[in-house]
Image 1 (cartoon, rainbow, N blue to C red):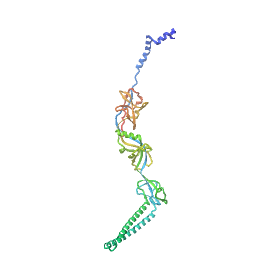
Image 2: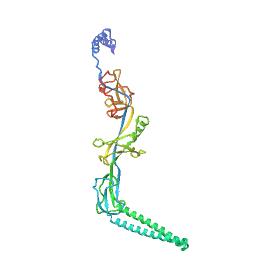
Image 3: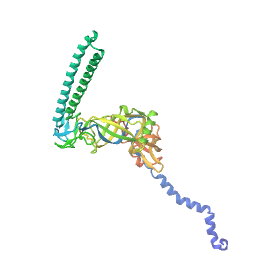
Image 4: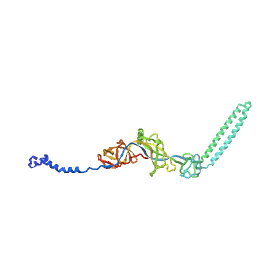
Length: 393
């Protein structure tokens, strides 16, 4: 069809086979543009700050949710039946060991004690008579003045009298104990709960014998649990030498609901031998000094385990870590240019991030200005950022 149009032939020849004049015209028109592009200055290097990553030892802090519990809670119960004469303490107040809490009517028990003492005196008199009889019979038996049966009866009577005395002494001791049980005192330092009975009530021993409860607050216990994954991770890092220290030398710090930190630190005094199958946690308990009774049983707290160290770890500031489609990465300076380094991170350490893989140490990681750079872009290092330091330094 193109050959059928003579007027179109020169046009198609121009498009398909441009002659030398056409090429020259094109080059002449493009030349000034290329020259102008070459004259444009390149973008200046981006000014950045860097930190040099180096292996170091850092504290490892673990945090869990816990609940406080009294280290000793005693139920005050009646041991004998009697009428409550007196409530001798202020309900909800602090009580001390030996402080009187309740007084039952002692008169029936005093009468029982007096009766038991009378039985003891009677038994002792019978024993004295039996011994005197035996003392008279023995010489006569040697002279065959009395029969052997008379001697045997005297010996048996003396032994029976001894048994009666021993039984009477036991009755006296029982009566003394029952009389003592009418005076109920606090066995420890702690807060006493409300009384379950009022004056004049009949108190009986057994299931309904609870009078009140005294809870000890110093020291106080904190119960918490570590998840199975955390336990496995800790054990693996401990076995590989990444962690130094353990529960035996760890300190426990408590953070209260308002964000304040309890002034006294404690120790872990119990670790369960197995992981709870229902909750998937390893139960632990810490003992915390509580001299000012600032903590009460039943409080929810955050438990921080301190005193464990990570050795030979690499850390970078959190603001130096970028998030890309393939995961987290940092920019490092190599030959005055920004280079991308994909990394894997672990736990937080203050405002730092622990790097588990991707860096080997010695790299200059860009901190400030990282958001402005691109891979391969020239950079200029300004005043170095303060390198990350372990807590407490």
